[in-house]
Image (cartoon, rainbow, N blue to C red; front, side, top):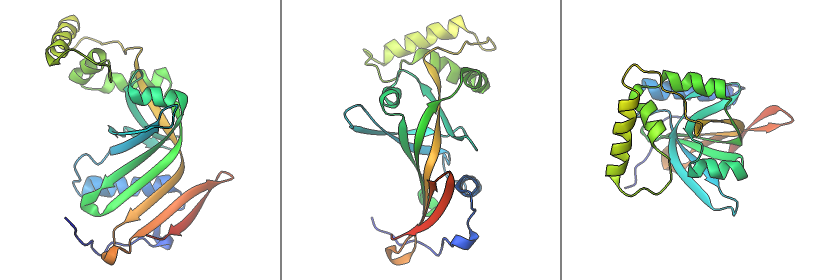
Length: 207
């Protein structure tokens, strides 16, 4: 189960001064390389006791404000973020021997932006968001299917579906980026950007 990595390398002089720009470059590379679900990121949160949880979510936008994803506001991750509004994410682009880690504070996306994104989603996904009370215990799959069928009858294809109050988005405001490139002999390249007095400082870490 062990494999060596290729000839990819990280050279500080070739990296963007702004880690968001560097991240966009790598995300574009992952898309161009055909990496499955290139915007999938493992999101880690912690509850009031500090117990960590991790799950995969999809990055839906990245801009100067940060990294945005959408979810049920009554989910386990949302409960964690309500008491500890900080998170860490990992983009595991294994096929390219690359990984990006990001940590930062988290805020909710405003409702106007949530509504605009919700309206852009496929009809089936909108129905799924209405029906699923994420992370709650349900009796069986048949219960979920019946509720979906009822929602389908209430909002036929082409009907405007209102955004549920319990569905929204979160934006991670990055305070740290780490770009990892696999190298031969396990002497990997790790370049970290961290914020110091609102300025990004780039530094190399030992593998």
